[in-house]
Length: 186
Image (cartoon, rainbow, N blue to C red):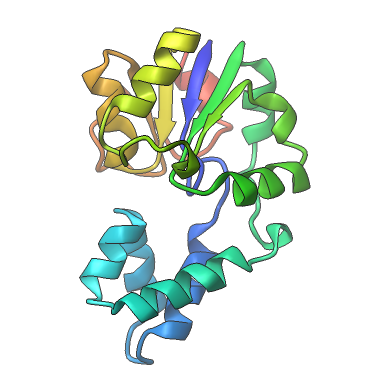
């Protein structure tokens, strides 16, 4: 199987740490659960939802960039799934430097044949350009993501989709744990 992966919230459990960074910048009245729920839509949606200033957004992004990779843990069972896939690729809005330092910290960099990051200049998800690029290079079978914007481009290109920990998203498959992956996606 040839799989396209989202990164944040799909391979690595980043949202709890991101929510803490937002909480440092936002007023004390904003609770972490509300931030987390908005992050599950998108980072830019969260900034918009809380009507953050450009300075606040920059501060959050700087705080996020300084999170230690040791704090950002892979989801349980992800390495077993990556190990058996024929091809793994990533499409993320994260910058390449931070992506690679997190993957390397957890020994996951060895599983990916190709990576597209925000540094590559493709339009942001849910635009299909980056997915089409990766699909043309690798003939992908499945796209895995935790948000609608991760799966919309794949659906438009005819690639099967798997939603991770989000049953609200339109997808061919839904899983809550990578321990279920082999049962659901055969």
